[in-house]
Amino acid sequence: MTENGALPDDNQIIAERRAKLTTLRAVGIAFPNDFERRDMAGGLQLRYAETGADELVAAPVLVQFAGRMVLKRVMGKASFATLQDMSGRLQIYVSNDKTGEAVHQAFKHWDLGDILGVNGVLFRTKTGELTVEARSVRLLTKALRPLPEKFHGLTDQEQTYRQRYVDLISNEASRTVFMARSRIVQTVRQLMTEAGFLEVETPMMHPIPGGAAAKPFVTHHNALDMPLYLRIAPELYLKRLVVGGLEKVFEINRNFRNEGLSTRHNPEFTMMEFYEAYRDYRYLMGFTEHIIRETARRAMGGLQFSHQGTSIDLAPTFARLTIVEAICHYHPHYDEACLNDPAWLQNWFVQHKEKFNPADGLGGLQLSFFEATTEALLIQPTFIVDYPAEVSPLARRSDDRPSITERFELFIAGRELANGFSELNDPEDQAERFLAQARQKEAGDEEAMHYDADYIRALEYGLPPTAGCGIGIDRLVMLLTERASIRDVILFPHLRPEAM
Image 1 (tube, rainbow, N blue to C red):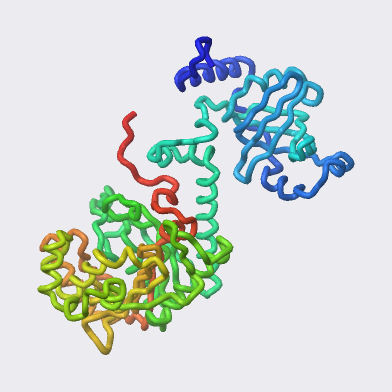
Image 2 (image 1 turned 60 degrees about the vertical axis):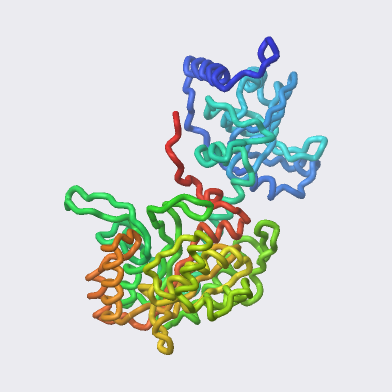
């Protein structure tokens, strides 16, 4: 508090802390780098959780750990503080008797947010809290900016995304989400390796964007004097590897799509794509279900999650419906006769002021109708199967119904989580579909695919019957951590430039 009772503003606090740093520089090294951490707060809390006060006195435990000071209680000849590291929090006790009066007096002037190194022994306070009795304590890093108010943290959501470093310091729930994300990615990788897949890396800059329908980011290579496109999907490169004999491959990859921002979309996002020879989309649905379920079990310890107050259960076999079956199931007042009538569908879009492409055939109109009316209602895990060929340029046609493909998309919590299909391995059919996509691009469709002559050449060497799938890692993390926005599970989401 200032003399008139007002709270100091951040500028005043920063000025005071800079003055303290100036004093530190005058008497020695302000940012020492010779402290060796040997212990972590969380490890000590876990290892000595059942160790009583008398045991700690009888068999002293020497510790040497460091962390950011997040709580502080200063008294006369002794003070308490709480230090936080990556693993958790641990209290320290600083006193004239054990730490020395000069160090204790200096400690009293250190601020919340400062990073300290501590040597001492463990003991339990009268209230039973595990604490380090400091024999020495050093200021390792002086924090010039104050932490957010301890009970509220960062209250502005956009500030949380912009200043993730502050969010992680002050928000335990945020730290929990990103530690869970790391476990989820590690678990996916482990499951794929256990299943005999080979992890590979493919280019992030492509001479021709492909593997998905999306608008790419464009850059320029100076030495080659040529445009390059940031990867929108690794699919065509991964299938080249299957042609080459690497018959079970996967990649956890970063993709870039020049699209709008939403709670489900970020221009830069993470996918896991995998391909296996001599499999089809039916097998792949079961394997994808296994990956989702086992990741939840191993990484999060359960199969039940919540979405906006609704329980989601990953234990039962995932439902399988066609686009038309799903629409009729959730909207019984629409019958198949209407849904198979292009004129009726177009009229519906006009009446309801929903976006659609007038050039689409029946399959494309049905898909747009499904996305407008039904997709958000698929809360429990559901595979939507047998997509129209006109919207699936890389998927194999059904032998029985050439107008549809052997393709599925997995929806959970109203969001698409995975997309997979039996791969198109007929080079002539693929060439015709690329040409159709090229004509759409010439007509103004920025998301249509280019004609990839090298990929056609690869197919001409022979792609075995293959199935492939992509799983959205960000959306999987959203599901398993029960977060509604993709920005909550990406450490540094893209935002408009900040006004400085």
